[in-house]
Amino acid sequence: MPRFRYAALDTRGRSIAGEVLAADGRQALTRVRELGHFPTALSEVSPVPSKRLRGRVSAADIALCVRQLANLVGAGLPVHRSLVVLTEQTDSPTLRALLEEARAEVRAGGSLSSAMSRFPGAFSPLAINLVRTGESTGRLDESLARLADLMEKSLQRRAQIVSALIYPALLTVVALGAVIFLLTFLLPRLGLIFRDFEAALPVPTLLLMGLGNALRAGWWAVFALLAGAVAGAWYFGWRGGWGGWERWLRGLPAVRRLLDRIVAARFSRTLGTLLAGGVAILDGLEIAGTSAGSRLVSEAIGRAREQVREGLPLAAALNRVGGFLPVLVHVAAVGEETGKLPDLLLRLADSLDFEVDTSLRRLVSLLEPAVILIMGVMVGFIVLAILLPIFSLGSIVGQ
Image 1 (cartoon, rainbow, N blue to C red):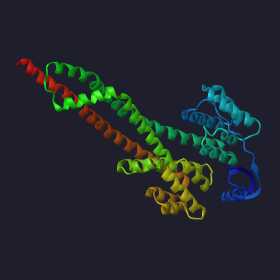
Image 2 (image 1 turned 90 degrees about the horizontal axis):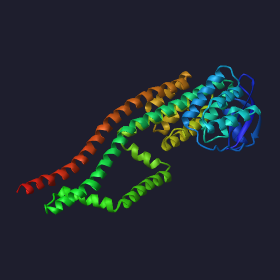
Image 3 (image 1 turned 30 degrees about the vertical axis):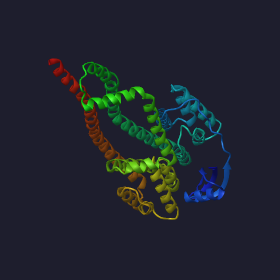
Image 4 (image 1 turned 90 degrees about the vertical axis):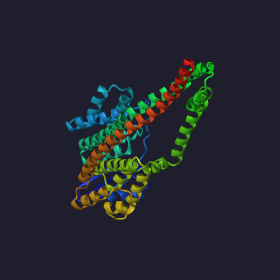
């Protein structure tokens, strides 16, 4: 989408300048007026080619870099000097190259947000717009601090989910490895012994021996089946934008409750951060919709944004669209009435994060014994299938 640079007068008659994204000049003028400004000049900014980094910068490195930049700018250092300090102290070659490119553009007279926009793989539209708003309002350090808070919260949530799934996943892999070892290595050798004694084998043992022989003879078919299942799942998600999987997961009551709170917390924190940073509510809703992490919620936010554009309050738009937590709608209504919408949205995000933490701990506490029980039953069945013919063999030898 093209970018337009504008000059305008605010409600107090002061001259201001900034940039907006719009499809054409008419829409750009409309967006400037939606910000509460009276436009006096408008020009399209020539697009700057995006830079492609050689390598990947982790989200943790970007979050740490933004936090340090916020501290340096807040301490009074100019942006260019702050970028020099960060370039000297970073250990990542890819991040150092990014910072050097940004420093060169800022030194040439460009803005930090325009430098960030040249690296779409490292900086999201949310980060770019928040920094751009901080530059236009003269509160860049506050915008960077809010952005760092938002990125750190996102990393914390991701790390929490990963750590919660590590133990059940590890337990499942070990148990499956033990089962495969018993089926493909131990059972066939015991079968040779039983065959020499011409002993009748129990049905569970015959069943498992047949399964073990099939695994040894057709292991490639098993891998092909697993690869096909993964490819089919990916294709189904790609065709439906992962909406199909999301609808299936939301059919599970416990998972739906957790997903609703995770998405609502992310939406509340993103929108609250943007509004607190000075971003207009329509732009904030657009960015929060793309950052929601849910296709269904993103579409709902898009419909709510159109109703807000038509003059409907945010709470009424969310309530009319449906699909949002009632507490989010009530908080939005109270925030609009009191003029403290950003603060209340951030408080709601903290409250929802606490609920998500509790729900995740409860879910993991139920998942771990369930995995242990299922794997214990499988291994126990295999051990029983091995022991039964051994007991019968002992009776044959005794005779």
